[in-house]
Amino acid sequence: MKTNSDPKEGLGRYAWQRWGVKSESSLGQSVNGYNLDDGVYQDFPQAFVKREVLRSARIYREQTLEVSPTVLGFVDSVVIASRRYMGRIDYGYMIFPVGKQKLRPKKAPPQVFLSTLLTAEGFSVVLIDQFLGHYSNLGISRNNMLVTINVNERVNKAGLEKVIQAVSRHSAYYDLFVGNWSSEALTFHQAHKLISSVRSEDWIVTVDSDEFHDLQHYGSYPEFLSKCDDVGINFVRGTFVDRLAESGELVRMNARESVQSQFPLACSLSKVLPTGSTKKIMAYKGGLRINRGHHRLALCDFYDVRGYTDVSPYGPCSLSTEVQLVPYPSVLGVHHFKWMKGVEEATRYKATRYSNMSGRSKETGEAYTRLVEHLEDNDMRFNVSDARFGCKLVQPN
Image (cartoon, rainbow, N blue to C red; front, side):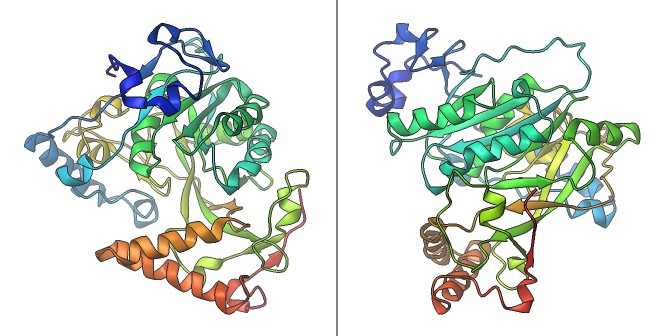
């Protein structure tokens, strides 16, 4: 990873002045509660991916097509990442680490890590406390929560401090990604974090901040994944369960009440109003990785075609590269607490933005447009009485 010689130049005054950093000598000290032990970094993938690397990735991809269809549906289908596409990505800045996490001894038994990104703005901030509490209740140690906080020019100091307070109640570690969020930039950032924190024998639970995993009767994550280890399973599949208010309205969440009780309906919106993949990779061994949307596994070809090989757990793809993929046989529920007050603005934005593009992006925009139209036709609520949504009342845990 490359160290930025003058971090103030790239971050701009909104970071260094609004957060109280007065000079480069401040690095290594506590800045608004941040222990900048390793300072501020900016890193970029390889500018040019060699032809032989692309060829090896393509051959490897052809080999993986022989994997069973059940597994293949949960493996990213890589396309070559064009220079034009990669050149438009804002990789931002990374501050590692910020919390007081200490690396565990290498001889420690297999650990279960949570890896997630939290934004310090938007309607979902109110969910953070319950989100991290949920995974704490599932047995993930506060020392194993690898939390990234995304900060941009729209975030003020008071808002950021509120997020940090919520994170600190549950996690001993957090780092910062400073820049405009994108799934590609997040993938690159998380690759740095995981390659330096997680061993192949460990487990990673990667989850978005509005997703609550349902392990049903399987107990805690350490207990469940230990049993998976016993039989050679190395990843767990999930599918979205859309949680809605009982009326179908996009209600404002009350942080003082259980999110489960405020959104008691479990529905399948995607059967009627699909806007993207409902598949999720819930947990996976430390020698594997997942793709940008956390919907599928990402193998060595995913990293190689992007120039991310140096932060990949696989190393360069070759004819000898072999990864055995053994999924947990059942597909578990990922309860999705997205549909609350504030999401309509993001939905309209996606509908407009993607509809003006071409190909699959245009199709995505049209899907979001249909969802917006459904809400508008039903007084800004989902028609939960529509049997096609399959809504069922769920008792809070």
